[in-house]
Length: 352
Image (cartoon, rainbow, N blue to C red; front, side):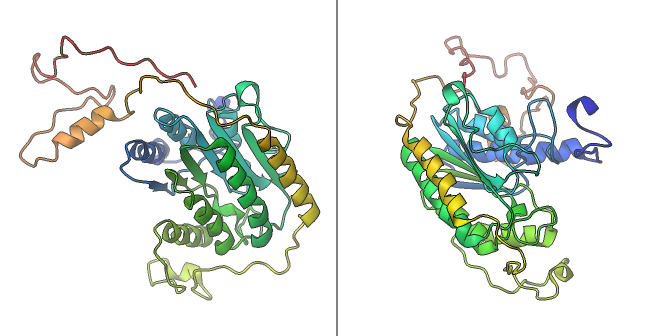
């Protein structure tokens, strides 16, 4: 297992229920993408997803399966252009690597850069081949706070939306960029972090919202509860309601965080403006939004499962048995589910 960076002495240890949990977390992200594809919702949320470090053949940084990549691949069946935005404190290296050579996915990451995991995400890393200039990286230093973050996040995302014109957006909301995180070094509050979510939501584009990092657990819960309220346009109170984990929120038992006054912002106004202007100039050089020729749409990943679920809505109907290994519906009689003689062949997989 060490070949895949899994096991003892790695940052991806084995634990009981590992496969089942990863299966559920990844499946939820994919199913959210399916719902967006079919117009069943305009916003889908999976706070257990957002594992942006995993690679094709390697677990990394507590991430075993890259559910983000799987969800984006599902979105690409229906959407010509997908934008991925990452506000975790760590660079979204696994997602960037997966789509580094294609223009159908633009990745944009705001992250701590330097002597910090995973060590990637330089502003000069812009993609390759067809994907050149479709990877956007905004490297930051420690101490980043709400006002400075908003001043670089909003103009860059606005320019991407204007130039790239994505038809779907995936937003990774890692909570380790908050003040007080055990592994982080930023100074964002819930207002600053949540304002990024609100800004992206405001474009009205189909949106898949995912979790990510976060190592001060009480603040992770605060963050994603607050951002759920932002996405639902449902205000929540400042007082934490009583629950089984109430004592975790002592001593104030309040929702919002206060930034650390002793943490200096190492990002100067001049350095942020220089990086912002460099990225805006690069984006201005893009020659319009890439298009996609008409193509057959591959079937949904869970089309057979959905067929079973639909028929099972009748309480008097016995759902057909399902082969869990192949996903195929088992026949109780040779004549069942016989293909029509005029049925077209299944579409070929898309090349992204």
